[in-house]
Image 1 (cartoon, one colour):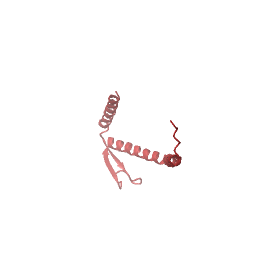
Image 2 (cartoon, rainbow, N blue to C red; image 1 turned 120 degrees about the vertical axis):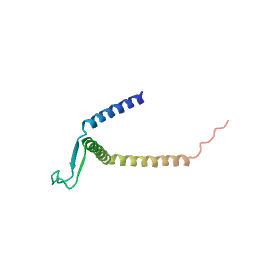
Image 3 (cartoon, one colour; image 1 turned 90 degrees about the vertical axis):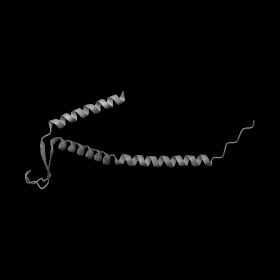
Image 4 (tube, rainbow, N blue to C red; image 1 turned 90 degrees about the horizontal axis):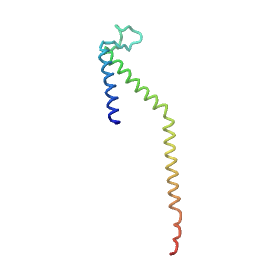
Length: 108
């Protein structure tokens, strides 16, 4: 059932993406020159509108993932410290168990 739902969602997303691509086939000029006009831009790219939008969305996802990763650094550091402390306590408990004398056996 889960596999079917996953395939259904992927199919719906693919159909929506294809409809978007077919509706936005016109060419667009993307200029990276903030001071020049589009015609005289130092660096400009012509690409289909759907490619511009898809690349912009992908860059947004990457930027969001990077921002999330950076902002969660303190949580990763705390987890590393907690794991190290747990390992120290575990090793100390094992050392104490090994140092304890064996309990006397009961006579039969």
